[in-house]
Image (tube, rainbow, N blue to C red):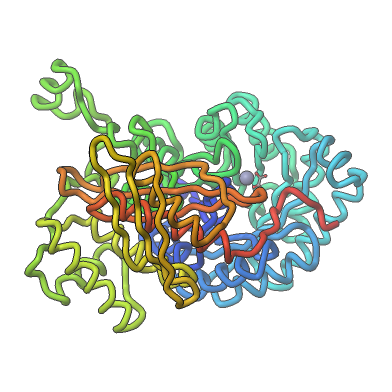
Amino acid sequence: MKDQLIVFDTTLRDGEQSPGASMTQEEKIRIAKILEKMRVDVIEAGFPAASEGDAEAVKAVAEVIRDSTVCGLARAVQGDIDRAAESVKPANQSRIHTFIATSPIHMREKLRMEPEEVLQQAVWAVRYARKFTDDVEFSPEDAGRSDLDFLCRVVEAAIEAGATTVNIPDTVGYSVPSQFGNVIRQLIERVPNSDQAVFSVHCHNDLGLAVANSLEAVMNGARQVECTINGLGERAGNASLEELVMAVRTRQDVFPCDTRLDTTNIVPASRLVSTITGFPVQPNKAVVGANAFAHESGIHQDGVIKKRETYEIMRAEDVGWSANRMVLGKHSGRNAFKTRLKELGVEFKTEEELNSAFSRFKNLADKKHEIFDEDLQALVTEESLEQETERFKLITLHVCSQTGETPKATVTLSVDAAETTSVAEGSGPVDATFKAIEKIVNSGGQLQLYSVSNITSGTDAQGEVTVRLEKGGRIVNGHGADTDIVIASAKSYIMALNKLMTSSQRQHPQHSSAI
Ligand code: KIV
Ligand code: ZN
């Protein structure tokens, strides 16, 4: 029997720390559900001390997830640990993850604490967290740049205080594989009580080495990997779940352990995270990129036709790739619609929700002959988001675009339930539409990103638009889908405005010390 490699997903916490990737409670629940379906062992659902909204979102995830452990992050201070404990309480299995920095630069410049004080604080925090749950994870932040002797002392003390998982973060992505693997091996060998905790790693990708460092750590005894879908995360991101899991699964001849993941949910999870955050997946991204299983050269195509294994080391269907399947059409009924969405992991809380989604589906089916899984997913993503985007609503849009004429848009919005219309010209129909919306809302937000992609193929496909707006350092995303890309653009811009004008400020776990 091989050891189990525990998969700890932090898409909802570290992933959310990517600028512009903030997620609503509904979105977090949808991602958490697909992670649970994938059999991820631990879901880090957020940093409850960051804001009231974060605490509520972690609690909401803890209430619905039954099969995965739900974890909340906390700095090594009482307020954070209390918040995390309260938020994860409804979970079947809960974990508190507490951390404090141990590198000389972080202790001196950020925490302004002596190493001995840091050690005492770590011990106190783990003991305090253990009052709420038996499952406590401790991280010495910036371990990748910490002194190994000091790290050994902190880790030993944390285990002695009750930490059941010790996570070694390469917070700034500074490590290289052989050296990082050596750190893990040394820790396990030198810390006398290392057999009483699971060793975990949390690698950032600043040098593009997050997955390589994590795998080297696994070869040297780590039995938990922290990762995110699509490698989302602070700065260059975290180790990507799909790459880590598939490396271990594909190279069972090399790795002494395996995960219990159902990998067929990997591609749907990747798509969902990409749609929700508006972060596209690069086509050549391993495992989940659109070209990951595409063969262009004739020699390769010929080889794959003769024997797939000539050029493919994994089976596309094992990670959830399937040909676009026509699932529903104009004549499909409410029950077929509901059943297919259930298969895709989406369930409606109320009859009204189902009715409203079904009426959108019918509208789409009028315009588009064949409805694929991807269309359904876009439709419900929009549905779930729209409930929270009530301040501004698109009522009508009329666009005039003609050769030799300046494009003009007439937009009617409902603003706090009152209808307002405005007209604007622009360099193109989308520009005119955004200008007309801005005339009404006057948000002052700066457009940072505008991207359009097709959800399925064909000219009748829905266009999915992502808009990113920035104002006073806050970044928000909006997305919208429609067979008309100008309408999709308007929807996505309005969604971003709703977030920009309503969400509250969040605190970043690592930018300030409450100690
Ligand atoms: O990168 C990091 O050090 C973290 C910790 C909070 C684990 O995200
Ligand atoms: Zn991190």
